Image 1: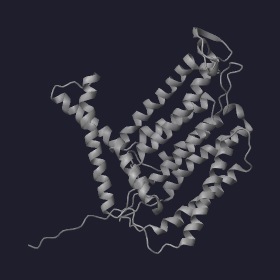
Image 2: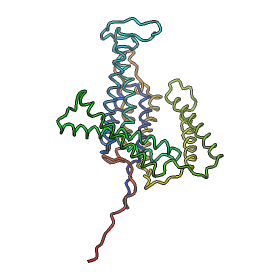
Image 3: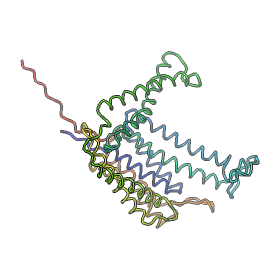
Image 4: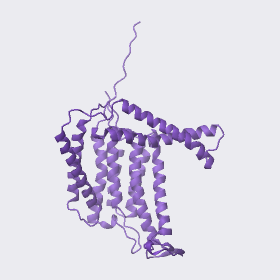
Length: 372
């Protein structure tokens, strides 16, 4: 028997979670661009040939649009920060209840740098999960959820199936319209493509929901202990609260939450225990479940090694993590920071080009003999 040891689908999403938290901690443009380069490289080299893999270019365009829109908002409606004035827009007076918002006025280089940095931060978060979505099948991510999320998994699977089906359907309908000599651009093209695309995507989603329902998703066990349900519920709720507090402590600059790292670990343990304990009430079987091996562990841990490196650098050399345009100067560049961001490339070592997810055990082909 041959076994495929490529990273599990959940390992990619855990990796993306670490890189997205790192993006929220950064404000140095050089380090942020290095992190963006890591995401683009991994996404370009490991995106799946399946329909969901085609969403990676869409997330790239969405990230660029976020940066441009943030800069435009700063130019037109943003707060007028002091600094080196680049140009001045005509000013329009606003009522007193709109204090803090200005329409027009002087636009400084410092304000544009701040806006571009904030837009880049959100674009990196979107791109991180866009890479995970392009590499790992959303269906396999939901298949690996604990049993308590059966009903939610069915609904989310139908919703997530809608996006890749739209991408594939747009390509099919556009090709068909080109062959018929009909327009594919402009208002007429959009109008002619939208209706058949939506019909096709909804039809596939309904077929998926029907097939999952026919396989018994959502059935509950009749042997569930009420006491165990209460204990698991309390553990899950308290774990979620502790985890949120720990993540807030990591992201907050004031340090109002004591021991944020320990709070995150404790919250994850309580939340995982409560979820997996509650999942035992669900009755379901898995056909060839995908293993979570050492390749998956390396992929998942690498994203959080980037977080750890960013936290260490923020305490030893804050200038390579944080940046302020006051005074206006070039951001600091550090090989240690670039090396820390490069840790996010470790999944390339334990995965293969075009890998979709960790595949189940493959049985050798059966030998058929025919008697003469």
